[in-house]
Length: 267
Image 1 (cartoon, rainbow, N blue to C red):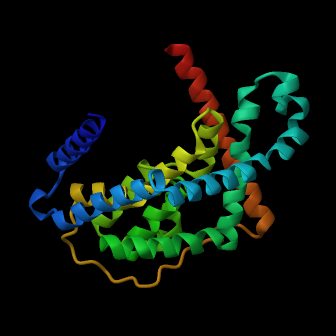
Image 2 (image 1 turned 180 degrees about the horizontal axis):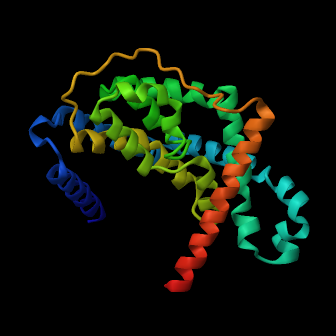
């Protein structure tokens, strides 16, 4: 029964997307079917197959170990307030504080090119599978790690050459995902990291599926065969990149805390 309800949910969602499509007659159903099958395969590999579950668990433990490294910085700045055992529960410090560290780490990996390397090769695989261009595949994968405002910056010099359909992929993948920094925040709220990682892994193919149904690719695509991202940005050096990442993380913490105060108070 549960399986049938899940299947019905997929059909309903795809039906709504079809009704909202700008160009229903040009939807490439072969690509849609390929994307749905790919999503099922990814889900089965990560949720049902033992080796897949082990890989997710190992990555989850690794990410948690990295996130916990931020405790040293929190203890230095906030002292005993960062320790729930001695100060009790202080949400903005103990739960949201690690967002600052993770944001700084992502900014560092972005600056030295590690993130770009990983994103580029996963993007190539997604592009081969879905038949999408390198730029849109690149951004769809980047949204597994970066936020919706950060990932388009990676390919900003190519945006003027993109079609409307390619730009919609960028928008949909941005709205359908969250940055690694926010994943840390959700985990601190009690959501298992395994589930968050599986959801992130579904982002690229799912985003492309939705976008290509809403606005099928009918325009001529400009060939861009070797996407190179601008990972340096305005940062002068590594320290500058870390500082900018930490500053961005602090803005996230303030925004999340302010939203929670407003929403919880009103509702």
